[in-house]
Image (cartoon, rainbow, N blue to C red; front, side):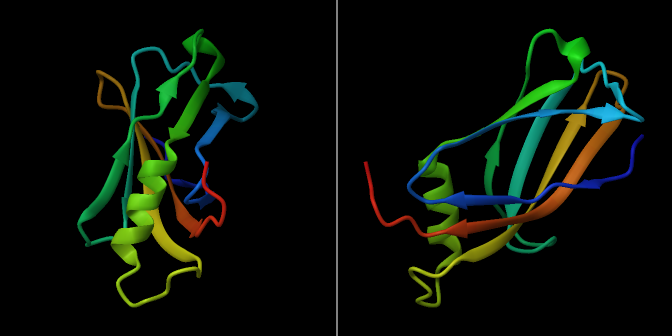
Length: 123
């Protein structure tokens, strides 16, 4: 088990987010063969889940590379769920975690804050 590392994001409601990351420990790639990845967004640690996305391991899994892909529709729905106090146009923040699990139940995870900015231009 590896304790959580910090990974923060800034997203915009009018833009897809696609970013590749490399998981390493002490400079060595972590072999992600057999791992599944899940990412959840919540307003607070005890709050309900606002959205779940499924990052993917990039082949070859032995390189430790993985892709976070979040469609703009998901970003916009999280923003809308939090924007209950008329903050339209202002950035909001939510919590997220990213959990890597394999068949042996070994876990690697990240925690962080996602800032979501309201996009102006659509299309």
